[in-house]
Length: 216
Image 1 (cartoon, helix red, strand yellow):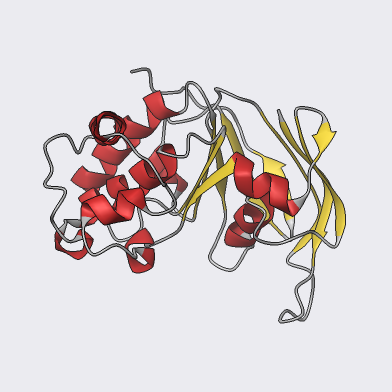
Image 2: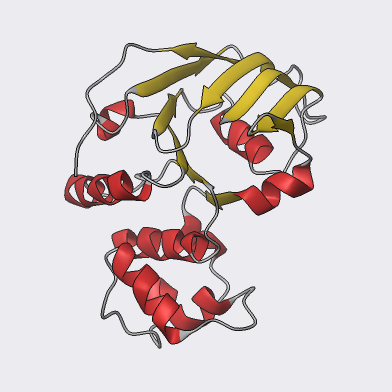
């Protein structure tokens, strides 16, 4: 279980706290969705969970134990909004191998198949991929690390509806063996993904009515 208790986050660049007394509990194997308008603090929430920032007050616990930012960086895989802007490799193969001294070809093939990119050319430049393929590649990069916590920041941003549906179908099996949290400003695009949904407003998460999950 991932627990955020009484989290306050007030970066120096903000006039007021972005998150104020936020509480949130997330379970392994149960995909979760946090919705909120642009500027509500969704990305800041993910930054805190992923260890890219530290709260000014409150505690973030994993399996009942308090965590440091460094520990959370190891626990979490974060796929940024528009992840294609963060690609560093000159080819798909280079992108996948960044941070790995030794990476067997079999593992690369397995992860690419897991995200629906089986058979893709590893010599192709990431920027030559379609928008949907780029999102899948970003997922593959994180899955190679095998993090127990997977965080997705606006994963459907800029994609057409057909690609969004395909991405949604991909997320269901990915959530079975890990903790999956999606943040979005358009929760209707994820209808049926999760029974566990919150609305982020005024720095706090408000629990929404449960919805029926997709089964795949």
